[in-house]
Length: 91
Image (cartoon, rainbow, N blue to C red; front, side):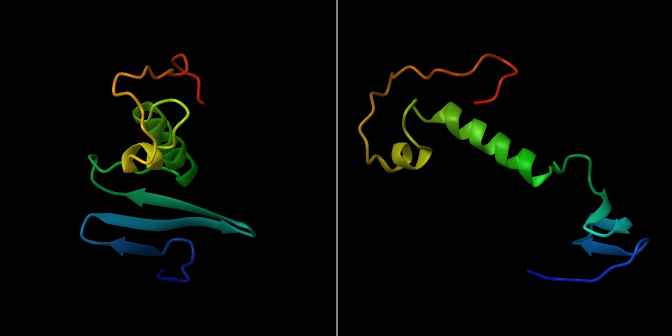
């Protein structure tokens, strides 16, 4: 992990296409601006985690973790039904 100190108005470059700008800092809080290609998905960590868990739940049969299902450590019927939450609800 690279650790840097930046002040408001200063920026960090990641490759040729991504620029992080410190917009504002306060005790316990930093406000960042991120410039990058429109096709690059930029998500907050907690949203990324929620989407990842939702995707795993959609793939693995109910009652099995994705790791169990992928490793084959638990036999599950190929056509086992998967119960998904109604649209708009998270599990």
